[in-house]
Image 1 (tube, helix red, strand yellow):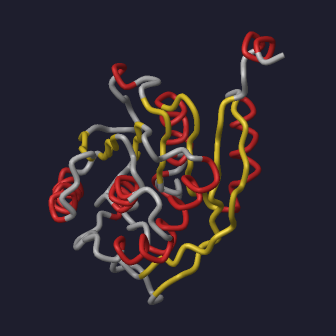
Image 2 (image 1 turned 60 degrees about the vertical axis):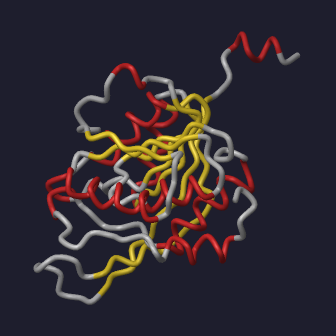
Length: 221
């Protein structure tokens, strides 16, 4: 299914079950099918970073991005999340779609990822917490963790208002960053304190990749 069309991929992702009772302290907002499909389709069609690759999905939640990556021919995809309830839905989705190339690991990404995963993935995909209010800085903790796991590229969503800060940190960490698209994340009313039915948040779809070392640049000459 690696050559699956964007429209068909989005239709499949609409069948993925999402949170019934999202947890506010974890900033649990499901990745909407139209955004997830466009993210994944771009990653594969423009950069060939999914088909046949080992993929990590950080803060995988119910598994929208993992399911989509599997459909686009990922060699194997592992979702990481702290929430056992979300992972229960994740595994149910994997079972419903009869996917044999997807698994999940429960762990606290913000504190410590097992050292055995360091630099074990070709590509990391994620829709991390935006790092607002009591979760301030969580987006950067996810980004730092993702760069520890990936050998090639990281693809992530971040609030457009944080773009300058994120690009500065990427430069400090020795990685390059490019905004692939400016999107509007439709945030539906999910919690009691939400007063509006939905809010559009401006987000960047960003690709991070590693700069070649001096040795690699010399070898390319």
